[in-house]
Image (cartoon, rainbow, N blue to C red; front, side):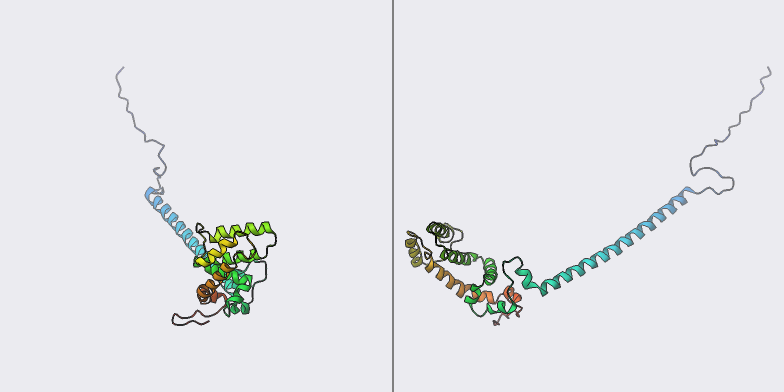
Length: 231
């Protein structure tokens, strides 16, 4: 054997990764250029979606504002009906509401007037006055002796007792009368106290009520200026 040399030729691998295959015509896509094109396409799609979302949001916001404005106008046009919605009697007329400013007696004679006045007293933290007055009115209608005694005791505990958080303001003379009457309760046990509280509401709370923005808005009257009152 003569030891002839054997030449070994290294052939290039026929398998290349994607984007790395050598095309003899030079038409294979460049990897960085393809990535840039994909990024640009994604950005354009995102911008389009964002613009569409903003347009949709503007339409929705406009629709909501329009709906709220319509609701507000409706409430202004039917404020009386909305305020007295759910009552057991028809809502008062505008003329009746305005007549409450003529006298306190006229206000207190109607259940709707007492409702508005009670809401006002609640804002002034003196709701117990009209609650006591109403409880006394209910007691006057009682005829059964057991019911009278039960209601009288409840009124005393709720509005007369110094331990009650809803104690009404009464002078010592009236309290002495109540204590005597409680020995034998009757429908008229609290007459003196009821009159005193009625007078208090008339002189103290009623003038503020008829000049309050809440009442004057309900009666569709202009709000009085600070220097004077338009009653």
